[in-house]
Amino acid sequence: MIDSHCHLDFDAFDGRREQAIRDANRVGVHTIINIGVDIPTSERSIELAEQYEAIYATIGIHPHDAKILDDQALNQLRRLATHPKVVAIGEIGLDYYRNLSPHEVQKTAFQKQLELAAELNKPVVIHTRESFRDTVDIVTRYADRLPGGIFHCFPGTVEDAYEVIAMGFVISVGGVITFNKAKMATVAAEVPLDKIVLETDSPYLTPVPFRGKQNQPAYVSYVYKKLAELRNLPLSEVETQVDRTCQKVYRLVETFEG
Image 1 (cartoon, rainbow, N blue to C red):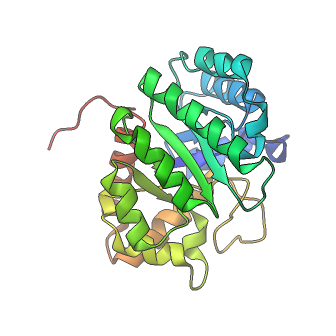
Image 2 (cartoon, one colour):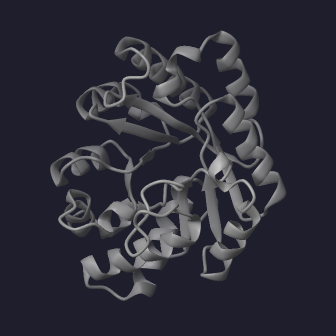
């Protein structure tokens, strides 16, 4: 199993980070992607990746902090991206729900980081909340120059998912699919299995049966189990396909046979 998106460097894990990593390994999580959301978290993600063989890092500036993306920050990201365990640019995108940066500032920061990803030939991890149409409109301009990527915590409909897939991206779903009547579960049940990866987004979005408590990478196992239930497939088959897709997107392996 792979947790394709988490934030182990966040303060919520202080004092229990090493235990959370051990717990993940114990339940069969063999790879963890730790996601940067600004310069400090991007640097800490790399530090974790250097410390633990199973952890890889992404680097980027979240739309909440889009206003900090100046030339100096962009150059810092460019430098960080050269690290051998940095597998993507992200999470980047648009967030019109919290509106912590003005929309136009978010769009500018998003486009600059997509340009950086195209320049460096890195996949992207995209955050979109209450902003799906603007996000897709921007990504469309860069899609043919990017090696794909992930729409994280996918917020859209089945039709939206097919639009993203047609651009060469995959969707990521997490603990939300274990919630009652979750739209995300409907999407996860219907789109092609080989276009889905799974995540925790820990310490957030904890799945049932731990909803209301702090999330952790080990709990991605409950997301795998729920996806297998939704698809009426053996867990082993879901695990094999989802892990293969995630490894391809993040280019953790060079080739697959068959």
